[in-house]
Structure formats: structure tokens, C-alpha cells
Image (cartoon, rainbow, N blue to C red; front, top):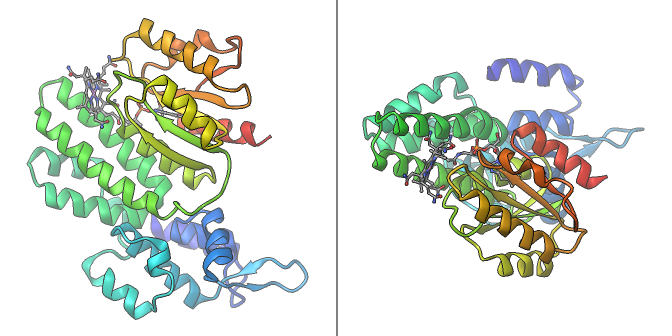
Length: 316
Ligand code: B12
């Protein structure tokens, strides 16, 4: 798979003159916004410009250092702390020989494999596989092809009695940790829309917020996690004080529908019209009748593609 990505990336840049920003994003899994923001903020990478068009061209050594940086970030370091380090220093923090290299075959880490490790209580191996997969697959594919399908699979196995509650809890913790590490790479970004993520009182499913936050970040939006079970008044005050463009909530089918409707109504009323209200999760579709509610809409966003549309529309 990685070979295919590399081959595609190779075709998109002219041999010998450096890699374009899109090629670098493909190779490293970093977003275009992150690459530009790091350049502005830290002076690295500092790509040359193509004569005439002024487009960025990254040298092979810059690309190699960016790959090393993504490896180090996946281990939990912050970009500001590592961007000034040399290749050798970065390799010392997260050596390629330990399998953190992007050349790890994505296919080797499958949802089946992750599930097997969880079911057999091999949690340290599960963590290590998640770390490797994060680097090899990049954040977007990590969320959509591994983290989300694994969570769904764990839920099904738990419901069928094939996994114990401890497995569900362990899976949540491992995914949560890995997602937070990956999110750290984006925390200095000032991109838009700015989205405040939380759950309503009574809703414990906060893991989805971390997946959505990472997806928003790689799609060029700016997530702000506020956490679970936030009282309506605090959510509305937070949204105003932080000057966000949207409030995003996870609502699962576990939540009490009538109470959730009431809570959404009060929240919508308490939010200024200019702030969007987005809801996702397995209980969101059933609340769809709310769309168009006076005082501003409540938008149902229940797929990765719909998240992209919500971002695009908000920007317009
Ligand atoms: C982990 C988990 C838990 C953990 C949560 C820990 C945590 N910190 O999050 C714990 C153990 C606490 C838990 C508890 C319960 N859980 Co639970 N849980 C799950 C599990 C396995 C994963 C949830 C998850 O993170 N999914 C990942 C998200 C990203 O996936 P998604 O919801 O499909 O989201 C998509 C979109 O909707 C969108 N989206 C989601 N949120 C948002 C938000 C925004 C802003 C946007 C834009 C988009 C968006 O993004 C995704 C894009 O495709 C699910 C299984 C599943 N299928 O999800 C069960 C599941 C949701 N739980 C379930 C149940 C039954 C429960 C309990 C009632 C169990 C019990 N008897 O106690 C309690 C209820 C607790 C409560 N009051 O809220 C059931 C719900 C069944 C139903 N009726 O639909 C599920 C489906 C498991 C199952 N197969 O039966 N759970």
C-alpha cells in the first residue's frame, strides 16, 4: 500500500527538483496546514520556491526529517520541543530500527490483528501496533481504517458476549492515548473552523470526540476538546469565550432521547446564531428532525464525508 502511495507521490513531483507540498503531505501524513504553520512558526521546513509559480519545493533531507518528526510525535513529543533537533537526535528519540519507520507495511497492522491482541490481553503489543500503524498509515487513515473500525468491532464483540467489559475499557484507553499523542502535533494550529467538542450530561462516549478531533485537524479545522458530560451553560459560555465557529457533540443511542432533545434546544438557544451546532454518533440521526430549529440549525454529521462537507460549508 505504502509503495502505491509513494509511487503516486513520485509521479506528482518532477524528478530532481524537490517535492511539492502535496507530495510531502502524502508521504508524511501531515496536513498542508501543519506544514505551512510549522514553516511560519518554527522556520522548519524551509522549502525552496519553484521559479515562476513560487510553489514550495521540499528537499529530500527536509522530507526525511519530517518523516522522523512524525515518528517522534507519534511517541508523544510536542512539535515545539523537537522541531529544532537534528536527524540523529530525532532518531535517538524514536529509532527506525524499532519499527517506527513509515516504511512499515500498513497492511501488516489490520483491525483483525489489533482485535486479536486485545482479546488475548496482549495490551503492550496492542499499544505498540497502534503506534506503528499511526506512523505508517498517517492520521487520516489511522482514524478511518483502524481506530473507528476497531471501536465498532469491540462494541459488537462486547454486545455478543465475546469480549469482557475490561477489554472495551482497555481498547478505549489504548486508542485514547494514541489519538491524543497524534493530536499533539496539531495543537499550535490556528486554522478554521474552530470546533468545540464535548458530550452532553449523561453521555459517556467521549472516545469518538478524539477521533473526530484528529479527523478535523487533518482536514484543516481546529478542534478544541472540552470533554464529557459538560453542563449546557458551561458549553455555551465556553463556546462564546473561546470564540468557536461550531460546537460538536457526540450523541449515542444510549442517551435518553427526550432529555437530549431538551438539552439541544437549550444549548441552541444559548448559543449565538453564528455558532453552528453539529451532532454525530449513533443517536444523532434520530434527532435529525431538529434541523432548521428556530434560533439556528442543528446539523447531523454521522460520517467522515459529512464532516468534510460541514467544514467546507462553514468556511463558505
Ligand atoms: C467505548 C464504548 C463505550 C465506553 C465509552 C468510553 C469513552 N470514553 O468513550 C463505555 C464503556 C463507557 C461505554 C458505555 C456504554 N455503552 Co458503549 N460503546 C463503546 C464503543 C465500543 C465505542 C464508541 C466509540 O468511540 N465509537 C467511535 C465513533 C467515532 O464512532 P461512531 O459513533 O460510529 O461515529 C461516527 C459518526 O457518528 C461521527 N461522529 C461521532 N461523534 C461525533 C461528533 C461530532 C461533533 C461529529 C462532527 C461527528 C461525530 O464520527 C464517526 C464517523 O463515521 C461503542 C461501539 C460503536 N459502534 O461505536 C459502544 C456502544 C456505543 N455502547 C453501547 C452501550 C449499550 C453502552 C452502555 C449502555 C453499556 C451499559 N450497559 O452500561 C453504556 C452507556 C454509557 C452512557 N451513559 O453513555 C452500544 C449502544 C447500542 C445502541 N443502542 O446503539 C454500542 C454501540 C455497543 C454495541 N454494539 O452494543 N461504551
